[in-house]
Every structure is written in structure tokens, then in C-alpha cells.
Length: 413
Image (cartoon, rainbow, N blue to C red; front, top):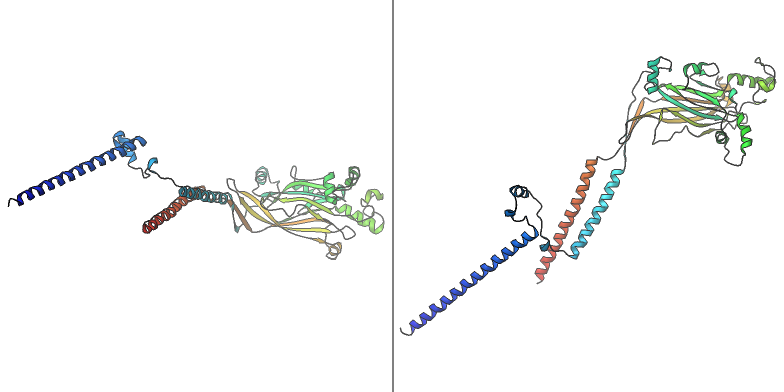
């Protein structure tokens, strides 16, 4: 019994010492944790002075409670070479996609549609009073017809023009088409004459000055109703009768003075009606298209120079709409042309004279041509989606790669 009591006392002393050591360790751990917390809080207050809510006003605390984007601390963010490479790759990809999206936005999308043309009342001529003339000039009932043609081998006194049978030699043309909307005849300029005869270089201006006096240019603009019609520029009836009379009988049997130089403007030959069409335009031109009636050269190479250039025109009413522009009523032209030889004219007993005849008509179908770009809000949405999508996708991929590498490294360890 005496021996066991000292042993029990020794065990009690050892147990008490162990308990004291445990308590000391716990106290030391608690002290270290409080220091680290105080250090982190001090660091947060140093980096972000408003991180502690005690330093914030109630309004700022309320606003910061809605912050969905947590701000990381620069000292605890880790930067790596692989992360920089991935960021550069994402930025390059986003830039390429942005440029391609901008290119797509700048491209014009063209849409075509067909519908029945609107029928409008038609005033046949522009002498129906002040109200009718105002509507004519506004383009509601009439459209402008521009003509520019040069006959290099016909003088102006031997040339005549007519619209729907109303010729200028009888005065009917000027009755229905008064100035300033009418045609005029004049001597062609040197450039017009060179273009009409196909001269590009090598001729002196002095020679061309003499030669161009044998030619004539008809130009001007008239207003025509929006119905089919004919326009002709040909040898005048009087000059044609005198030329055929002198050629057949050697003298003028139409009542002339008998002076061959005065009554025969073609010097004992048939008139050469070769001509060059500089421009024929119906209404406002269609900007995206081309005018097939511009730059047409009708050469009468049958030996006599006598023929009729018959041009058939189908006009398609076209509504043209561009981005940030108002609508325009234009016309597209479908053209077919052929040369009618004098034998055909004689066989058909045609009353048409050699020259140029344009027959035009309007189609019952109209075309609507609309050019537009993508909606700007769709474009901005695409830009935001591209930037956000690229960086989110790259972040997910890089996160998966990093986590996979870390998991493999832990298993290998």
C-alpha cells in the first residue's frame, strides 16, 4: 500500500502537467489566429479603405450590397505566363470576330420584290392648265424623257423629230411640248462629231470644223405621259421627197426652184442616217443598274445609208430605297433593237422614214429594290456577345485545364 500511493501521486502530477501543456497550446493557437485575422483585416483596409462597412455610409453600404462583381485583392491574385498567353489568345480571337462582325454590318443587304404597278390618271399633254402643269412637273402624271442623238451626215434642215405622230415640221410638236421642255437642233460639237463618226485621234480640228457642219445634234428633255408611245428622229418628209425625186428623175418634181444645190441637200445620193445615241433616259435613272440606251452606235452599212433603227423599250417601274434616304421612283429599261432595211419598208408600204424610231411601253409589274443594313441594336448585341462569350469560354477551358493538371499532379505525388 505504501508503494502504490507514491505511484498514484506521480501519475496525478504527470496528468496535471499534460493538461497544462494542452491549455497552453490552445491559448497560443488562439493568439496566432487573432493576429492573422487582424493582419488580413488591416490588409483589406489598406488596399480597399471602404472594405470595412464601419467606414462606409449607409447609402454606400446599401449600394455595395447589390455589387455582383466581387473585387479581388491585387496582392492575392496570382499571374502566370500561361494565363498571359491565354489572355492574348482570347483578345486576338475577340478582335478577329469583332472585325468580321463590323464587315458584315457594313455590307448592304439587297431585297427585291415584285408587285402590280400603281395605276395613275394620265394627262396626255402638258397644256392642260396650271394645275395639270404642276402635277406634270411634280412627276405624278408625267415623267421626263431625255434625248441626245447625233446624225453626222444629216444637216439640221433635213432632220425632223416627232412624238406620237406630232412632228416638228408641222408645228404640232411645239404645240404639245412647249419650252423649256422641248427638243432643239444644233450643229454638233467637235467631241460629239468625233464620237458619232468613231474618230479617236489623228484628225485636225480644222478639218473637223468643216465636216461637222454636215451633221446635226438633237437634244433636250420633254415630259411624256406614263403610257406607251413612240419617239422618232428621221429625215424630214420634205427632204426625203426632194432627194428621191432628184435621184429618180434628175430634178425636183415637188415644186422646188430647180436649183440642185438648194433642193437636193444630199448631192444626188440618198441620205445617210447613220447616227450615235449619246443618251436616252426615261424618268429618274436606276442607280445600281446601267442604261442600255446610252452609247448606242447605229451604222447603216448597206451601201445606201438608208435604213430605220427600230428600238423597242420596255420600262419597268422600280422603287429604289437606300438606308437613310427617301424612296425614289425610277425606271429600268429592257431594250431590243434591229435595223429595218429599205427593201422591207418598201415591201410593207410603210410610211416610216429612215432614221431612229423608239417605241416604249410600261410593264404592269413594278419592282421594289430595298438596300438596308442590319439593325444597329442587333450589331451591338453581337459585339457584346462576342466579347463576353470569348472570355467566358476561354476562362472555362483554361480552368478545366488547370484543375486537370493539378489533379494529375496530386495523383502522381
